[in-house]
Image (cartoon, rainbow, N blue to C red):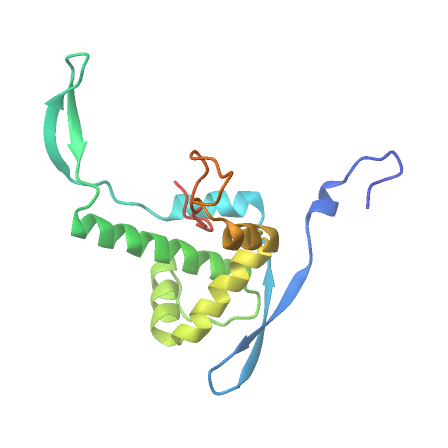
Length: 172
């Protein structure tokens, strides 16, 4: 709610903690408490994860005559390492956002490993989906727009994207 002078306070832009119910395939239900991360927390998370650089595939002259490296962004080792970095980033985000999830470990690496080794896939998936919703990465309007997008429909623009990427915090 805006203040008396019509200005929005920073506290108006921070929300509460949300109960998130996870449902196992067996029907068992578990509720965790999740909060949206602050902008500074997202920035700090990104700094805590190192992303790999693709290997150099070739060195060529560019049109200006300068030598340039050509990277192999399809290298299987590079792609696997990038996937691992993205997974680590998302898990760290979920762990920071979830207030009542007990995860053993002292370091980020220990906590990520404990989470990945100790959580069933159904729970991991639901936690990641809840993280995206709580942090505003999956607005219902966006999902509806994507579901209705048909790049071949009459009147669609050729420059319109056929799909968009939803990367919670892994954008570099």
